[in-house]
Each structure stands twice: as C-alpha cells, then as structure tokens.
Image (tube, rainbow, N blue to C red; front, top):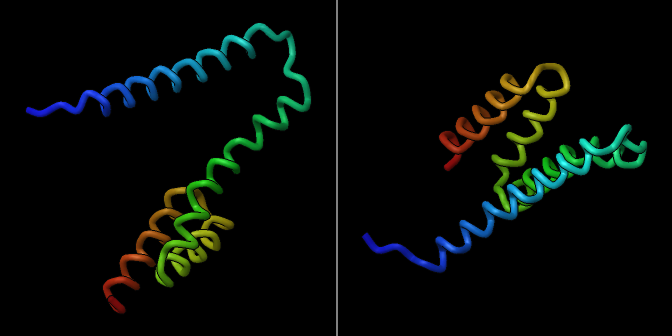
Length: 101
C-alpha cells in the first residue's frame, strides 16, 4: 500500500485545526457569563453562511436540472421539513437527468 506522506500531513493538520477551532470556541464561550448580542447574532448567522457556500457554487456550476431541482427544493422547504425538501430536490434532479440526458 502506497501512503502519500504529504496528504497524510495535510489531513492531520486539517483535523488539528478543526478540533482547535471547535474546542477553542467552546472554551471561550463557556468562560463568558452571558453571550454579547453581537456574538449571538454572528453565531446565528453561521448556518446561513455555510449553506450559502455549499449551495451557490452548485447552483452556478450545475446544469439546468440542478437549478430546477434547487428551486423545487426551496419551494418544498418553505412548507415542509428538511427530509421532504431533500427528497423532492434530489428526485427532481434524478428525474430530469433521466428524461433529458
């Protein structure tokens, strides 16, 4: 088995950095008596920012079927929870790829 040393070092560094940011954030927040309003607002904005970084590139790089599936997922997500939204978006993409590609 051929192990790439550089890749292993990158994976290890990423794991250490991920753990350090999570543990460091927990330590800092746990030492505060109360979370300042600006910090609370910033923490509440993180999920939307992460979602945007995942969805935007796929929307712009994907084909028409991806764009339609994302719009369907958005519309379903306005009414239903995560699982139906995911299944409808995924099903739309699969159906459109099957019919038109």
